[in-house]
Length: 134
Image 1 (cartoon, rainbow, N blue to C red):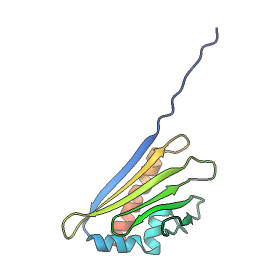
Image 2 (cartoon, rainbow, N blue to C red; image 1 turned 90 degrees about the vertical axis):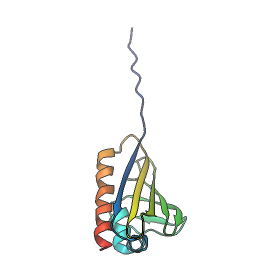
Image 3 (cartoon, rainbow, N blue to C red; image 1 turned 180 degrees about the vertical axis):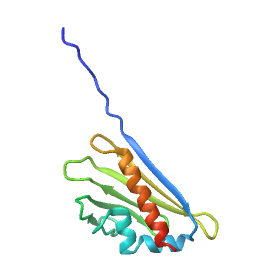
Image 4 (tube, rainbow, N blue to C red; image 1 turned 60 degrees about the vertical axis):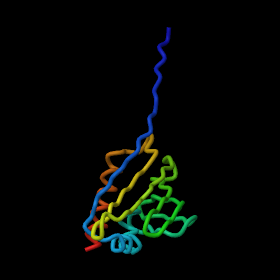
């Protein structure tokens, strides 16, 4: 008798967030610069309006799905042509007059993607955005 082994792939959601000591307008203005785009997408990546394609030098690519100034940007993110598609949702919201909550959610993070590496990538992006907003 042959033993059958069943495996189940569970998708993961990666969420990183940070409150930065900068007003919402300053944070948004940084996000809209070349440096802000590259902090999120990687070198060469450039966010556009809804429906615009983007591609970074490392081969990651996607499409801007939603763009709401001073609130949210949602884009598809593909690590490469063979990797599964994921969605990244970046939201910003004021925390009083002088602070901003930045939250990045990526899902689904399925087979072939390393959730810990993605979390580290997004944490680095938040650090770059925070430092550029000075």
